[in-house]
Length: 179
Image (cartoon, rainbow, N blue to C red; front, side, top):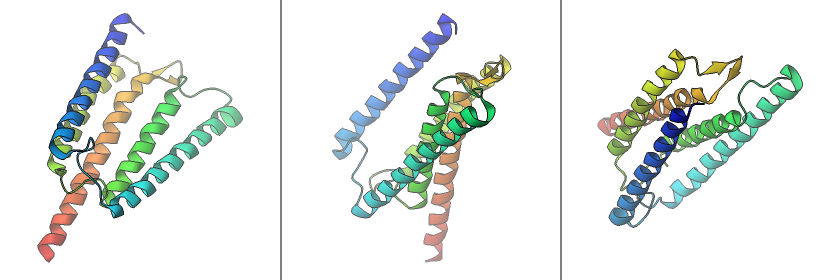
């Protein structure tokens, strides 16, 4: 990797940390909680179950990747550490989808509109990098998946969560209209 690429990653991480810190600070001042509000007991239980589903998804995917690489193919499919990162992102996706489907993603104080804007921005920010990595051939090198695939995985993850949030909001509006 070139020095400019590493600097780009470092700046991206620093900007991301600053944005998250600002959001946490805003939430702490507005609601008294870093996550933007308190979840009720039902939501806490459902989030615990969603966390469990995400954890076991990561565990099973990690085992399956290990078995495939060590026992079947006998060669790596991805760069070192990439499989762990992808498994973690899939686990986050499972957690998010489960929470959204069971109404445990938002508190009463959270505004879904803000999250929709955040998910759209996050997805759109990943697209130029994903296109650039594909165009320059950084996604697969020597038959091995590289870290150049991360913007694609992140875009798919956030687009999926965005879709789930929008579908859930539309379903809730339809239910409210029927009542």
